[in-house]
Length: 241
Image 1 (spheres, rainbow, N blue to C red):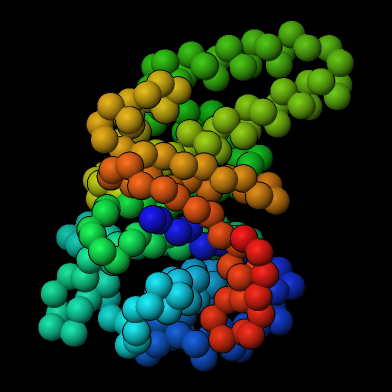
Image 2: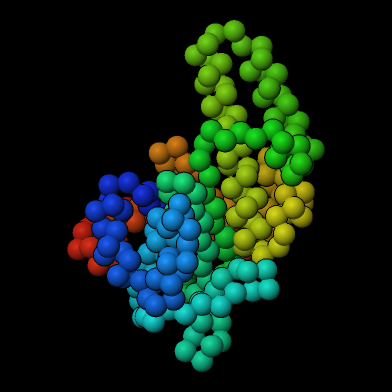
C-alpha cells in the first residue's frame, strides 16, 4: 500500500503551524530553518506530512535521511543503512504532498503536485513527445474554433488540466526512477500506455485546483489522504479519508 498524504497551507495548517514544527525531528526542523522565508510553509508542511505519515505507519523517531547522487532523499536505519520505507515529497505554492510506501518491501516511488492553470507552451515544445505535442495542437485548434465565451473558457480549462496531469506524471516518473527529467519527458508518452509497459503505475488525484500524481515501480494500491482530516501529527483531530 502506498499512501499519499497531502494538505494545503490554509486554515488547518495555520491553526496547527506551531505544533507541526514541534512534531518534527531535529533534521526536519533544521530543513525548515534553512528554507527561504517564502518557502518556509512548504518546507514545514511537507516535512510534517512525511514524519506524521511515518508515525502513522508505526515507524518510530528519530528520523534521519540520506540522499542519492542525484539528490533523491531516503530514510536511514539506525546503522545508517537505507531503510525499506520509500518516500517522496512535492510541494508548490499552496499545497504539499508526501508519498510513503508499505514498509514491508522496497517500492521506488515519486510524487508531484501542480496547480491547474499554468499551461506553458514552451514546456510542451521542449519536453513533451511528438504525440503529446499533437494532442495540444489539436486542443488549440478546437479552442480557436469555438466562438461561445463560456465554452471556450471550459475548453481552455481542460487544456490546462491536461497539461497539469502530463507534467505531474513526468515529474513523478523522474522522481520514482531517480533519472533526469529531460530523459523521462522524452521517453514516456503519457497519452499512451508507455508507463505501464515499463512496469510503472501512475495514480492521479485532483483537489481545489491542484493535480497530484504518484508513480510507483510496481502494481500497488495507492490512496490519497487529506492529512488534516485524519488528525495530522499530534493535533488530536480525527476524520474521514
